[in-house]
Length: 519
Image 1 (spheres, rainbow, N blue to C red):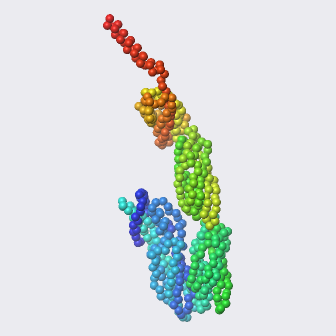
Image 2 (tube, rainbow, N blue to C red):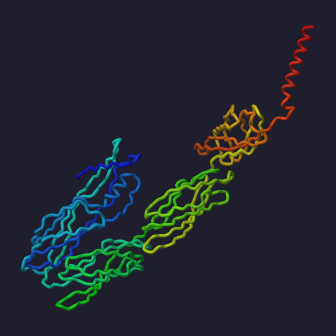
Image 3 (cartoon, rainbow, N blue to C red):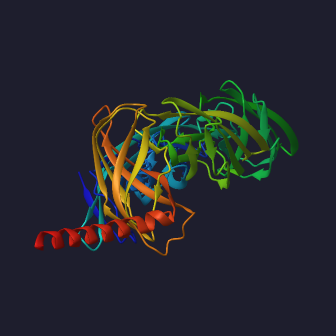
């Protein structure tokens, strides 16, 4: 096995290391002659077209190795091509090609000497040696990425029949290059139209029959000289896999214009493709309060789409804050990610939730098609604990012990830690509280020590953040933030002076008591 090294300088900041990826697809080489009627007693030029008919069967995607092998696995490299025959004398040497990508073809010429007394059919063999990518591995040395390709050696033998005749007539041949179509989609079928005879063929008209729709309706070729070929293609839709190419043409024979008609029968494999626009939920787990659902949308059609829009609707317990998503154009196989923010009621019940999404776009196939569809998105709200502040305590300027009443609107919580976040003008002296177990639906109190500045305006409500962390019923750690409000109120006049008055009375009483003792 030959191992070659290609160094790739990649402008990427971060790529995770991955193991070598093995190729699943391979090149598929075939060949056909352009002229199969050499003349006896002469050195004839035999023209052969070598075609790589391979197409991807597997979508690798993902890491760097997979992307590299996706581009290289179907290509044949370092081709060595030559002709052999037991009955004819091949004069040409070997032909060397650097590579032959998928769907590519190359026309080669070989000089073949035919004995003067030879008549009838003869066999020549086209020999092809080549290499294909077997696996690829990418390594990072701290500065550059190095892609290492493993190659496997392959060989093919393609038999070509020829017939030695004296009669000079055209022979029209049609060769299919793409052996499969997709059900319900426009698929492109490519053909090679060749004149393998000994005279010119004129005014060739070709039509594809056996499909619901074919674009264009027909192809026209003004003329094909002997050994000349031309590639054509039809975009077709429908059919059961059996079809024909009808050819009408003319040629000159003994000074007369001869009109002819032929039909070439073909079979193709009809594959079912789940061609659609898929909306995929990346994080189907919901949470009460505010959250975000991440989505991916993928175009699985064989053609690009434009004017792609998505519209989301949800039950009343949700508030979707971005219900319309305009994506625009998405190429065939393209994927776009986006997010939809939402808020969910505090008293929402755990379990499955369902959103509706409407998808509309224009399919840019051979004929533009407007598509509008509705989908269901399945989401899930776990029975995690979720705390809501249900009281609004009163505080005064100066030091206070503030008590919040909380409700566990979710599932059972254990080992619950609360922390009161300071707010401008309200300092927290004892910020943490703890509850060992809080059952689902239970209300409870927690207290904190706070100091309210004198410049905080009385009569207003102020929001405080109460972060919490706990374990749910399955032992998994969850966290969140509850928001509570306090009302700052000034103390009554007698409350402001009561403590100093009591202190003054106490001092006076103590002084009087000391005087009595001295007497």
